[in-house]
Length: 371
Image (cartoon, rainbow, N blue to C red):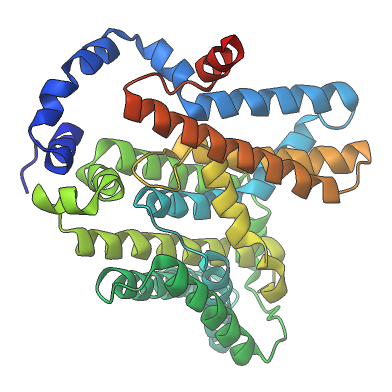
């Protein structure tokens, strides 16, 4: 595989040599766009504006509570574990896949880790370090298992990960007898779970930020990220230009599993228990956040920044509804509505891209009103 493969190579392999001739004028027009204009056109930026509006509304409704630093800090802390899972899910959905098992793998990894640490009987960093490694390795192995079935056995991702959802959760309940393990080394809870940097920033949020930054760099600045977009755009075209599609898919699902394992140890640290029954909505929440953030369910398009924004929309809604006294059930309604709108935006972008036009939501809406 040569180092100079670009997205145009993928498109030419997919549509033929005429791709370059037919899109010359479009590419020339795109090159005239300023970086600022491209940012404004990005779906993730448009969703970010929605998030800002939501924050402003709640700040006006409850200025003495919602807008306080301590409350915003709590929102960030609560979204940290989902952010770690969201990075892996972004890679998977960009490949046109899906992973319904991340919440269950999180639980299973945490259970195995907690059992190992309990068996060791220590309460120091030596025991905690072993637990961290075990949790990540268990998640990594489970993700590799998912990836192998999807890439090699050609079982649809929906079926594989739906089966893994039940298997991982069932095994966790078998190992524990359905009773949560609460013997977690105190160094995990006091340092990672409730520790702070500079006395204000939660360590768990710092860890999530590091994962997000590394994930963004890998996705947008490395060949691994380019191959991820290529596979999502067209597996056949990616193969034609030399991408080892099966191997790459296995790596992507392994990445998601490894991050689920990391999220498992973060969950143990934050809640001081395995919380087997507390992750029932995690899978759908993460998928919804990634899609709301602009990553296409059809593959080949998306980014980490959008995922982070997508995570904070339901987190802010939940927090704001509680503070303002709105029934929490309305959060599900609001998140569902935003999710549907996000998928519609993606459909508009895809249709505009197929015509060689603008993918901007606002331009589409203005154009539709003039008709």
